[in-house]
Amino acid sequence: MKEFIVVPGCLWDGVSGAVAEDRAVLVRDGVVRRIGPKAELVKEAPGAQLLEDADWLMLPAFVNAHDHGRGMSPVSFGTPDQALEVWLQDLNKLPAIPHYDACFYDGVRLASAGVGTVLHSHNPNNFGDICQEMIQAARGYRDAGVRSILCPLYLDQNKRIYYDRDKFIESLPEPLRTNFAAGIRDRIMTIDEYLELVGRIQDGLRKEIDEGWVEVQLHPNGGQWCSDEALLRMKEYALAHGMYIHLHLLETQYQAEYARRTWGKSFIQHYQDIGFLGPWVSFAHAVWLDEEDLQLIAASGAHLVTNPSSNLRLRSGAFNMRRACELGLACGIGLDGCAFDVDQDYLREIRVAWLNNRHNGVDGGVPYLDVLKMATSRGATEAARRLSQGVLKEGCNADFVCVSLESLTRPYTDPGLDPLAMLVQRGTRASVRMTFVNGEQSWGAGEAFSGKEKAAEERICASIRKLRAADPGKRDNEPLLSRVHDFYAASLRK
Image (cartoon, rainbow, N blue to C red; front, side, top):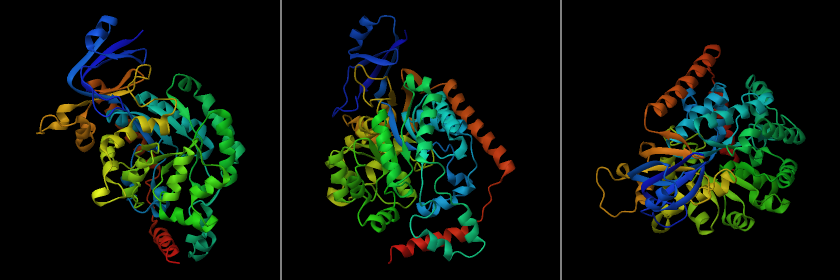
């Protein structure tokens, strides 16, 4: 039996309106057993290890509700930030980093920023090896001390260009036309093969799933890339197997245009019509939602994830957070591999989410507590499901982070200010003192953790250098990128 007592300066449980003082937390075998005054808990568990510091603000570990486990930003490989539809064409510069190395490195950095759970939208190096890639990704996160929700992707239409693809291809000069067309293979596998793959991934990770470190969700890659037939098969499978579905949706205005051209209505209205919309599905990005869409999502029980830095960097737009909060939608926050400073700093991402709201002016604000709940309890509702509850309550998994209060108030703040407000407005990775997941310490001070981060960095860099020795990644994509830019720009002027 492993037990310890955490005695912070103050505690926030992930749902209350304020922090509590004179509260300690007894953890036994990975579960929060008791929360109460220190003296009572010491009396109950006299042999428990004491972890105590009046400088700590203790709160639930954060949920990174949408990411890709790239390990290294595309910026590192000469793929600059630009509009998503252009940016996607430039990703062939990236090396195929082994997924264990990428996810171990990402996981260590996430743990150092207080993250306990990450939803991993998988980008395959080789579609034929997805099962083993995802097993290695999960083990990379596990060795970093982070829970993972694995989302193996499926797509069966509209690869590379959403609409009028044949016309676009015909407009290209040779040899660009032939090379571009050769890179299109819409359906890598049938939906039956995909569902069989999902079962094999679960079988390969049975131990990690049983121990609560891993969950698998179905993952149609995006609305424009996945047929209605496949979506409805996934819904049927999800409901039969107690699973959930996660996809990118309405990240850009061109994706909204695809729905208008295809059905004469929005994605959400169409999904409502075909019976796909419901509490079994969550949508990442969700920038281009109108009022009717939001009302339908609220009525259906579906979930949303905002990716604020990514939406800024890829010119996608701003999430309508204020209206989502007014409607009580379950929303999470995801880094999407595009944190503002390319550093997986989830605390800074909370602040970007709070500030990057579509509304402006005197009615443009969102309560900071709403954003913190999106990072914890609401994010867990959206993404973590069975892995972590995103709260500090008796009987819940012991996933928590301790943040330095002094780091939030330096060099000066007036006494009596709400530490949660300071956390949203000033918190960064440097504020994190320790992170625990499943009752195990995944981050903290000392050589063991700094050495772990250094080893993860050295490992991924060694892999990249080896890959670059075989293929330097030099690609002249500019002729294609300019054509893609002009195509999408013109498509909205019609």
